Length: 273
Image (cartoon, rainbow, N blue to C red; front, top):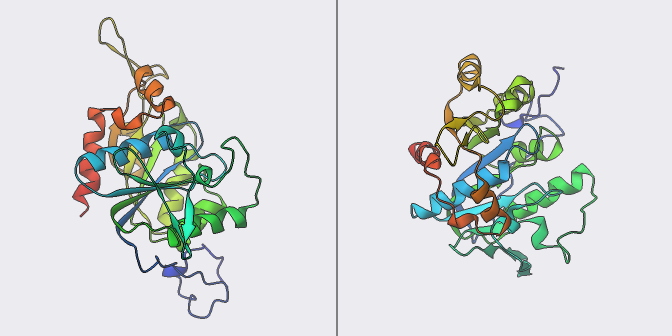
């Protein structure tokens, strides 16, 4: 028997396999037009920041948007949107929290009594909570559900690709990250799971000098074009280092950020319709 690649949907032996994984279904009171995963090969490159910016940018375009924070052990989405309330359930459904601009959000921190409490769970429990966030949350009508995925290519990412109907994937990286094989691993995982990659966003790409306006490559010269040509993916955009935006995120005011560089990302997402 050939080695399992965990892609049940495209496997020739799926009908007879005892370990076949079925796509989970939404509750009958919710309908989502498109699910987009936001993935990074490693932590610390700004994946949650990009997820938050994409959600707010889509919302400003008039779309209904939700964020499923699947980074269970390192949730940061609620803080970026200054969400301090706790989620509650009724009739076997979980009600998401609503941001100031109307973005629906669910995260592990919305369930914890204290935000600083750690979640010390093994992989299967983390994966099951992510599936519950998709299936049992009252999303109602959404144009886009963004999944802020955990970094890397581990258990939870595999569960999301296997069990949730992910339409497209956006990969977030940074200039220094491209010297490693980490982004390549994320791209290859998406290919193995037959998940379409919309493209790559390079975060912390440069710094604009506040005095002269010159772009400074803090992490050295980017080789993004060479990397994109080699692995055949689109460059969706480069986002600058910006201390004011970082302060807005820390203050829970990510919805106040206006970043023109996100316009191309939004257009790439919309163009897939």
